[in-house]
Length: 294
Image (tube, rainbow, N blue to C red; front, side):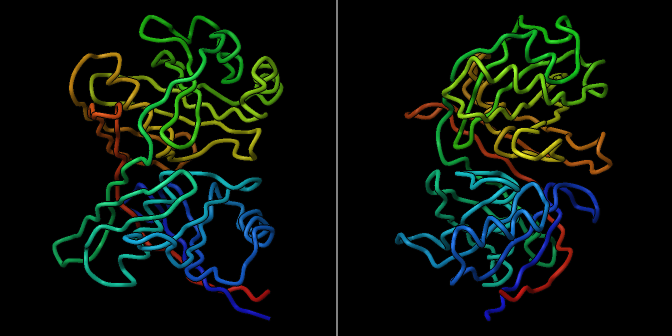
């Protein structure tokens, strides 16, 4: 029987019991895929990560990310929280480079006045890619809203990814707090899109200048609502930049309010030779430590 240690953090917050909780298994050598998935389901958090030795030169670690039901190629708050754990373990504030299924992911670390690592900025591993547009009425139903509460003047609901695909939809500012996921509507909305492989993770947002309110629902993957979703907000920043014609943009996102876990995410997007790139950053607060024997 082997013992595996883990730590938990609240991510995209600077206060305990806010943000998005994350569990990090700090040395996952010896665990197979089925065990990692079982541990992630047992933790019952949005995601759980598993740190392994690096497989590529220049990488700090190989990291695998699991939600309650499946492995994920990239996710924002797991990348940030895992990088904070690695940085604190090794000491110093040098960048952390993670080898994820979606590719190399660099995290620039942030420190407080005492030199303690308190957060960072995650560079999404891929440039913005846009997929099909979805029926606004179907997406409105997914969020429990009326069709006229999903405006399409800026863009229709659209699949977008920087390493992990989401459907992004703007909603009326007065409607975002009333939104609630409708599981049958999610199933109906995904039916015409076999390329989505049964997955529909929906980020809804409203915007006032550079201030954004967001919520993310993924009930088909077991996450009824997520308090902070870096891998959805990064392509949101990229999408908004693509619509503006500007060279770069910055946004501040508030998410998780309706869940009682308010989160703050800072976004930046820029045009690069290979497309639009984005980063998502914020703070982390360490919470628990524990171990499990298998």
